[in-house]
Image 1 (cartoon, rainbow, N blue to C red):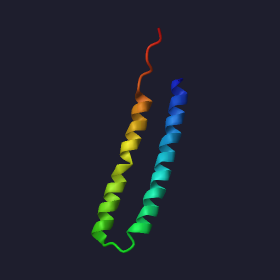
Image 2: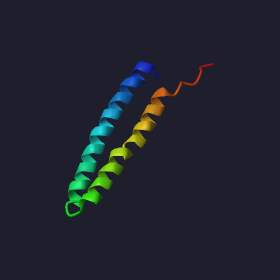
Image 3: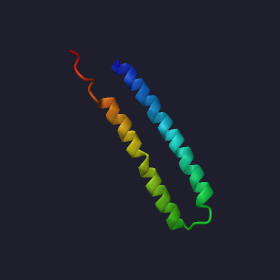
Image 4: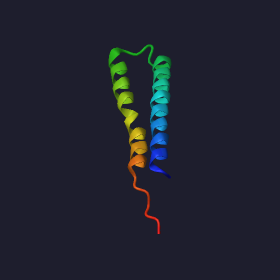
Length: 71
């Protein structure tokens, strides 16, 4: 796969990941945490704010992987 195409796909995947993840986390927070206290809110947003990094790291790792040599 050409590197420019790979970077374009990776960029779209990262943007889509952030948008979908933010929507899902927000919907979950509104639906499940409405009656919770401030400490639960803080912990949820701390955890969910860091959790999106794991799938993003996978996408970035795929982006920087060298293609196998031909031959």
